[in-house]
Length: 107
Length: 120
Image (cartoon, rainbow over all chains, first blue to last red; front, side):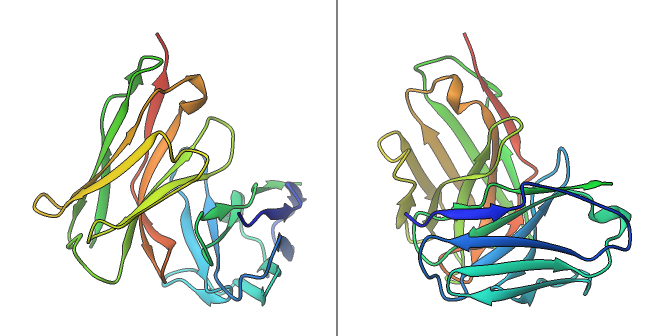
């Protein structure tokens, strides 16, 4: 099983801030990493896959980087609609696993 | 536009079997490019992958649930299903079905989710 450590678990930020969320793997996963955004009462939405490929329709202020064991999700200029919980997910091997989540709240 | 919709009982008694179905509309479940998965989320907690199935019937399960989980596909109905046996209160969660791509699976399309409560 590949374990994932996502940090921070809670992030307080203001509109316009640059936000960085990290995800660390217990073993290398190449670039088989996805990032999701989830708002209360809604299903997760795919933001980024293959570590850095932006899903169609996702604003360009979102970006992903990393490979191997260390990955980051960056929101370059936080908008009001970006306050949500973010999850990383590895799909290098079964069982598929998710990080514990990062809640981005209004400072 | 592909859509997924979960259906099934919202309340299941302890020790019984939870059964959910995901209906795929706007596209074929038989595409060789995709997997189909179940993910759950207990109230106030994170996401847990339950298992995935390929249209051919090949299945992959979370080892933590493997002894209790069965996922099947019905290509004639464009549906796939989840059965989770011997449920307890710990299985109370929102259950999502989703389409996996970039094998074996980042999930790009999700159902809206269905809340299942285990209680007598």
